[in-house]
Image 1 (cartoon, one colour):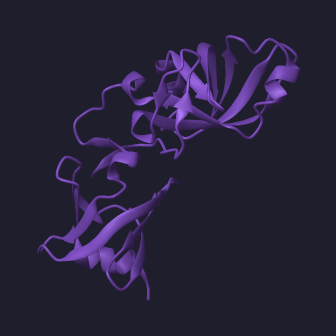
Image 2 (image 1 turned 30 degrees about the horizontal axis):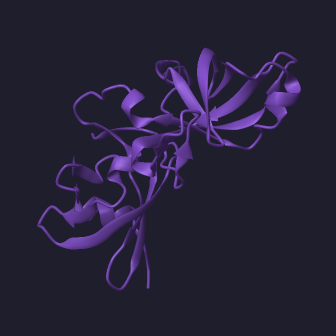
Length: 191
């Protein structure tokens, strides 16, 4: 079975305090700010990673174009509580509500063999095991079983990455191979 590391892509550039601009290929969307927690500036975030504890692997994050040093991470299920340098009280934390939490791709941990960031799978061409092209992956919705959208020449295909559907992923070659029989069992075709 192919394993994935969840992390979504975010589409805008980020400007840090030193004036450096990072593009979308340079960072990952790792969480969304839900709300302030308490009066000392802690924030509750919904993580987009495999585990809330994964956030502690990043030394800094970007929110709304501003770089923050990650001071502490307290995992709580699929959420986490973060303390960021520069966010000292509830009022400052409230301004972050609903914002995306980004991390530099260069700060991301190395992945074990056979594990990929979802963002790296976006844009890959999907083939059956016999080599027939079905189209390119244009969207992935992270869920318990991720939902993929493939756009071909004349149709759009939505499928879940249930066990046995994806046989191989080669992000360097931008290629995903699916088991056609299993794929047809879970795929929904739109014209």
